[in-house]
Picture 1 (tube, rainbow, N blue to C red):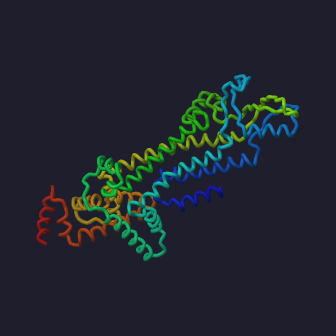
Picture 2 (picture 1 turned 180 degrees about the vertical axis):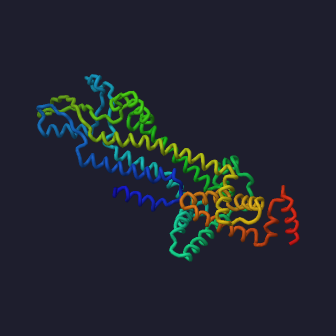
Picture 3 (picture 1 turned 135 degrees about the vertical axis):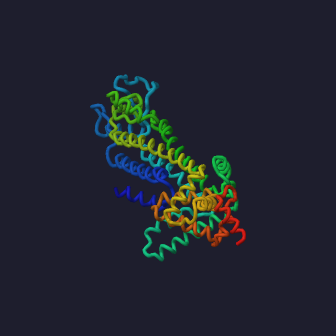
Length: 420
């Protein structure tokens, strides 16, 4: 437990809270699990006895130790009980050659699960915004000791986000649906100009999470020399059919194996071949670990795919982003005027000011803080935007509203505003 807490603390400190739950499943929780499993297997291999071989009766203690050590380092092979032991070494055998390397395989898996978050953190600064620090400061707002500290942090946060949003080209991207997202995916320059660089990088990192976990399921087919990509399905099928799944043809972690070796006589001229039967207690741990990991990785892949679809839908549906903003602005009592007036202002706030990257930043804040903190930040940005871009007078605000399909009462107000 101390090891888990240590690794979890180190991972949290490095990564921060600038992702969602699906990403943390891969980059944090799965990494902790894999490193913990690697430590457990390593202790069982090097502290306890990982293999025991049944040597011939005439073997002395030194011969038995030699046999056990030889079979551990030179691999063994698996045979079903109904199959005869091969007579010659040329006959095909199902070699079990991975068990010595399980701790290293688990550590490599952990590194692969961590790579997408390294890419996300390493490249998001290219957008001109330190998303890591923004999310870190946002997470501390609710824990501020005094009201002055809280207000100071909020002002700094809004200033930093506003500076980032203000550095991009001021152009309105109407709709910014599927075609817009496909366009910004094609090049980073388009992403920066259209305010979608962070979004593109975030979607790419999610794709990498999915490719990693699915790729590992199939890569383990080769490493473990078994059908690991369907391991859990086959196991459930055998259990449902009341068959012993540990003795099936696709068995990945045999507990009883065979080992062939030769020993030279005392004159070193004559050699004698032996085949011994060995027990691999360490495979009992490997079996349980990789059975759990199969179900865990399938779960992570499913959650990651759902998360990717949700974030893409949020990006290509402008009304979803407007609804998110409107809900928080209403919660913070930051809206004034009629529905059309508010709707048109929120549309400009979303499309012209926040764009995709600003909306993504606010969404990540919402995923990693509480509802009140998110509302405070959105309302502070809203007030800052109105002050800097629309001025304080109603005339300036109405002049910048779209003239198309204005309700009659707003049309009259617009005419009055033009004369202010």
